Length: 326
Ligand code: MG
Image (cartoon, rainbow, N blue to C red):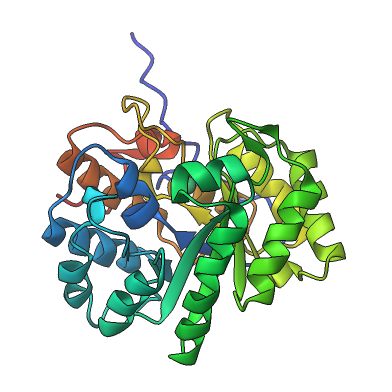
C-alpha cells in the first residue's frame, strides 16, 4: 500500500491559512508592474493583443492599478514599442492604468492617448542616473520637473519612481540621506507618490525601516510612499512586511515574477504578485485579488513566453486552481 501524495497546499482551494498579525494595515493596494517593468525586462517581445489580454485578465483578477506600458523611445525598449497600439485596446478597462514617461515628448504621446496616471523614473545615485538616463541626478530631475507640471496641468497625477534606494552596483551602499534628498525633490515638484525601488534587491528589513523613518522625518508622509522590492537575495517579502509594519499600504509587484526570469540574463528579480498575495492573505490583509485567477493568468502568459514563471506561488499552485484558463 502506498501513501497518497500530499496536497501542495494545506487548504483545499489553493489559498493560505489565514492567521492575522497585529500592527498591519487592513488593506493593501497592489501596484501591478508586470506589463511594464516585467515585460520590458523579458527577452521575448509579446504581441500587442496578448498584452491587452494580459492586462484585462489582471484587472479581472482584482488588481485595481496596472502599469500598462512605457512611452520611452521605441529603440530604448523595443519590448514596449507598441504603446500607441496598446492604449486604444484598453479602452473601458475598469482600473487605473498608469504609464511611464521619460520626458515631455513621451508625456505628450501619453496624454494624446488619454493617459492621466503618469510615472517618471528617477535615480537616487549618480552612477545609475548616468547609466540609465545618461544624465546626472540633477539633470534628470530638471528633465522631470516640466513633465510633472504638464501632467498635473492636464488633470493627471504623477508617481515618482526612485531607483537604487538601498544599494547601487557601482557605488555600493547608498546613504539614506541621499535617498531622502532626491525623494523629497520628487515630492516637492508635485509627485503624489514615491515608489522606493530596491533595484538590485540588496535591502534588508532594518534598512527599510531606517529609510521610511528618515523620509517621514523629512516631511514625506507614509501615505505618499510605496515600496518596490526585488527578490534577488530572497529578501523581498521580509522587506515588504517591514514596510507594512511601518504603515505603508501600497506595494509594487509583478505578476508571475515577470522581469525576474532566472533563465534570462536580464533577470531583475521583481517580487512576484502571487507570492505577495499569498503572504498578505495569510496575514488577513485584504487586496481584492483572486489568487486563483491571478495564478491562471501568469500560467497563461508563461506559455506565451515559452518558459515557466519564476514565482514560487505560481509554481506551487499551477494546475491546482479552479480558475485554470487556457
Ligand atoms: Mg522592478
